[in-house]
Amino acid sequence: MNLPELAAFLKSRRDRIRPADVGLPAGPRRRVPGLRREEVAQLAGLSADYYTELERGRGAQPSEQTLAALARALRLGGDERDHLFHLADRPLPRVAHGPTALVQPALLGLLDRLTTTPAQVITDLHETLVQNDLAVALVGRHPAARGRSASFVHRWFTDPAARAIYPADEHPHHSRVFVADLQAVAARRGRDGEVTRMVAELRRRSEEFAALWDTHDVAVRRADHKRIVHPALGVIEVDCHSLFSEDGRQRLLWFTAPPGTEGAAQLELLSVIGTQDMDAHEGSRK
Image (cartoon, rainbow, N blue to C red; front, side, top):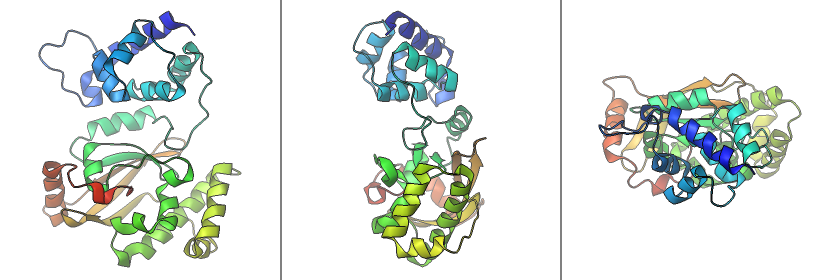
């Protein structure tokens, strides 16, 4: 492990990021060109003391999870992330598609700028990677799930509580949309074990899923009109839009409502209410 080079690399990446790039105020007395150490630590979910020791070339060897968190916080591209892992003498992460996947920088950069609109980045299997505060307030904080249960599609067909986010009379519509989208993902990925295992389990556990899968309907979910059940504001009508990464494995979702509508007024109120009383939405993703 090359501690001095790791320390220098972390500092160089920190120096190049402007506070505005990650939604932080510049402040009148900022004495560093980029982020402060404590800001990087906060973004990565680390203690300030621990991160400071890393930048000083001391401290414990960072785990693979810590390195992945630092890569996200520092907005590293793929080559930079790999370099970070090499310096820490850790095996390179697999090309991940679940909640440990590295958010693609282009999508993350756009998400950082969507400060007045609920938005989040998900994988093609509907696993939430990152959310802004308004998305948490609208649909709930993504669960700390691992494996297939991290997928909202998986939970939709295996956990009745996941469906509380939508009115009951619209559940059949969402089921059809989820399955048609998953058909497209399965075809695009080819003989992908992750998708194959998910489909096999859902066919076994859900008669509804099995019946819909056998229709072979295919439609990528690019946009949708949703009625979201909010614990404090009731039903909020929004339009959900998607922007896909180049490889199609990640999507930036954002939620809007036409000006002058009740939905627009509710989204405005949502920014005031924030994330209070969101426990009722825990586990809901879209």
